[in-house]
Length: 182
Image (cartoon, rainbow, N blue to C red; front, side, top):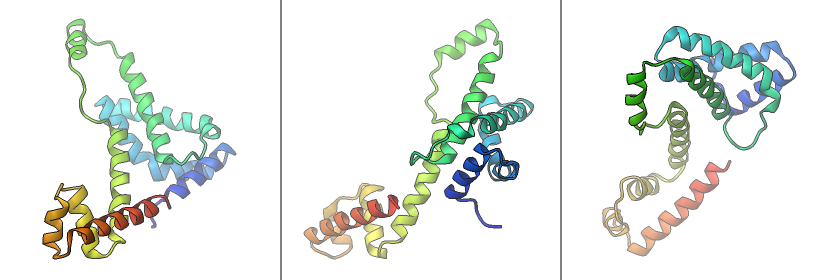
């Protein structure tokens, strides 16, 4: 079984907008585990997450024609639908007064499931693009921009003049930019 791509998901959403039930079933099969995880993370209740997941797919069926290919990931759209409905369900809960005031005082500093999913997706794209560079240049880019190693230290590590290292990094960044915009 092949992995579902961004283009596959965009095509399914477009077909769902035309009321294609087989595309809807395929989208459910391809995305329900991830969207259930988003709902479960927010709600902390399996039964509520299952209920919200049903609402998520109902909303997708109703609003598929509102999704436009904007250059953003279709998974971002799907995750946003799931996240918003899960948060709506969470808000409908009636917390105890003491519990509510204590929770209101604590800011949530952790990234949400949507942000984590997007970050993982972007990280894998970046890793794939770095993998397209020559090995030494890919290592230099990782060291400079992910580990904070100075250009001077990199030039010594790879036994090249400092200006050569600057050129490697500049050209490598241009290749990365090109790769990421494909």
